[in-house]
Length: 302
Image (cartoon, rainbow, N blue to C red; front, side, top):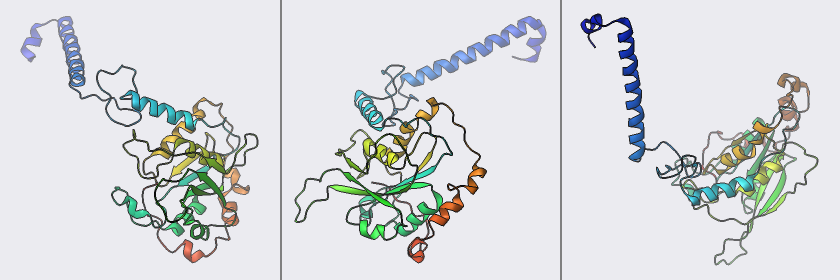
């Protein structure tokens, strides 16, 4: 509107015109957004497969299909939630599920592929940076990987059943999980053995060979005594299932009553301090093997 025309209008008329122009602009933007939604340019994303949710779906839909909704429900149910937040300082935990030694070639088409993983450097990082950690490997590679670990590690067993195929030798039907540290938990019974079959997550586009089931993720969390106040780093994301499971498992933190966290500086003089952990890890075996390579190797998880 030109200045000459505005001069002929009263102040109240000019205000009304401006207000009506803003209303029309907002209405046009809303109509354009609705039109874009009608043409398929929806911004709603499926909470399971991360694909677009169809326009015909209900307004409160969080999944794109019944198949994805059921898969999401089963996954969330199997992971469950952590216990009420434990007292004391939160722990920094890690789970490493790298390509098993000699098997990295299975992931050569993945964008994170970086060849064989340097397990010596990986274990060195786990020991130095975390209060507790778990490392998955194969039963075939277990002796070599254990030789790189510090004293005090424990070995748990996931009995997943054999992959049915012709073989001249007995088929591998279990996988070891090496774990260390974490939190002692008194009350619920925890075991270092899990019997749980595995089936491919066909509804998950990001799945890779050896993607861990939800029940296995929860079992690993429980081995470390993890609770909703802790943090967990998934060092080899791969399919992203472990990170997804941890988000579900730690969700109880938003519902649990707040806990009184001790000042982290006060922990420096206690057993949970980094200095104390370093002392407990003084015997790391052959130090040259643990520090021989860079720690930046990236590769996908099973």
